[in-house]
Image (cartoon, rainbow, N blue to C red; front, side, top):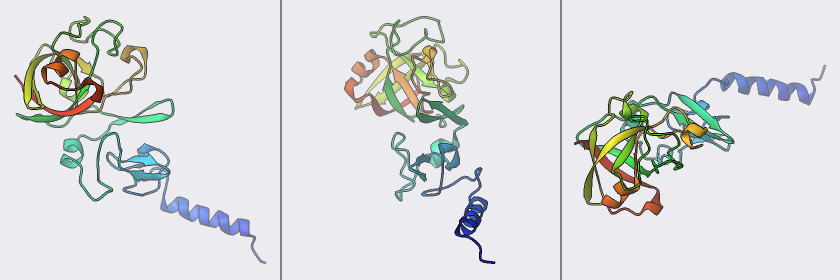
Length: 213
C-alpha cells in the first residue's frame, strides 16, 4: 500500500524531534525556541542561537567571550518581562584589584528609577551623593553594604559608597521600578559618580574597572 505524503511528513517530524529534543542545549546557529535552549550567554534570535547584542559577546562571530563566559558565572535561569526574556544570575565575575564592569546610571532618590529605598540603609539618596549599587554576585548578600569602592574610567577615578544591590535575580515589578534584572557585571552609579568621572550620562552604559578602596 502506498503511504500518504502526510505519513512521511509525520515521520520526518519525529526524526527531527528525536535529533533535537526540547531539552537540548544548542550552540551557535543551533535550533531554539527560547534562550533556555541556547548554550552559555547565547540567546534565541529567529529560531537560532546567536550572540546577545546587549551583552556584547562575539562567540558566534569568531571571537571569544570574556573569561569563559563571565568568569564561569553562568545564568541561573530566565525572567520573562512582557515579550522579552532576560538571564538571571546569582553570581558575578571574580573580583580582582581591577575588576572589569559596566557602569550604568541610577537615580537613588525617591521616585527615581532605583525603585524602593536603598537596601543597605533603607534610605533614598540625592543625585549629588557618590553612591552605587552592585550586581547581586558582587553585593554578596549585603556584605558590601557601606563599603567604599574605587571606580576608574575615562582616565579618572572616584571613591564611592555601596548602598544598594543591582538585582540580577529579580525585576519587572514596582520594587525594581519595572526595570529588568541587572546583568551580573554592573556598577550602578549616581549622577555624581558619572560627573566625577567626566562621563556623558546620555551614554547610559560605559566600561569601567573597580576595586575595594
